[in-house]
Image (cartoon, rainbow, N blue to C red; front, top):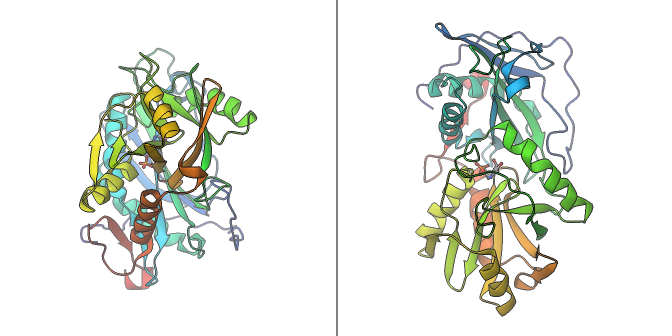
Length: 364
Ligand SMILES: Cc1ncc(COP(=O)(O)O)c(C=O)c1O
């Protein structure tokens, strides 16, 4: 953890909240006692780094985040590991993505070292909130919003960066059991040339209606197709998608309408290390449906920070439904889930150097 200097001024809460004994299957229902903030002003850069009690932040009614969607976020998890150490899982990869998202949205870059130091300090301060139960973790949410009070459509000259924490359980009520997915043939998540590869708030607003309609029909999530031909598979809900076609593991190649997931990166590295044949290539939804029906495709799963690895048990497209792998979790899906969750909480250094230690204050 060399180079991570903890020097952000802290104002402690005077009203600490009770820490839940078990957050259940909630995702984002609880927030810890503190948050990190910093401000940006054009010509001055980032300033006023601080940790303060968690709570509302005042925002100008004409802020570009509110009026024109200059708002990005990112998120990853901190785990309580088997040796008692708290560790952040791949925070640098998420910080790199923040800087790609902000570049796309005409927002300022953050200093990776400064932000990592703030993350370590904040997670350390609120470490008692990290769940003890297996599979549960502390979700770290980073957000940047344009805050300048100005009406014209142009990039804001002022920004607020927020870092806050939420103890979370399983993202899906199904846990690691197969989920039921509806292929969206009337809505798209992101268009070519658009902002789909950025973790921009607007992408999530755009996805709500399709997801709500799917949930009303008892589906867990939506599978998104490309915006041009409406037939190539892009993502599943808030996860990247992978499938086993014969003995080949396939995931769509990254484009400007797909979010480049960090879990996708971890999964691809592991799958290749295991000697499996892995391809990043386009898959037509009709071929996938036919492949499942013939038995050629026997596993489909999503990968993402929130759900980690989530098997798809059933897929519905144009009123036709197929059950994948008998509706059970397949061997590759399970192996990937076991391997990634092991890396989250294993003792000592991990083989890839993906994790950052958060030593307790006394030892820090
Ligand atoms: C649209 C979308 N795709 C994919 C992912 C998976 O990304 P990651 O593995 O970095 O969490 C997410 C979650 O962040 C997402 O929101």
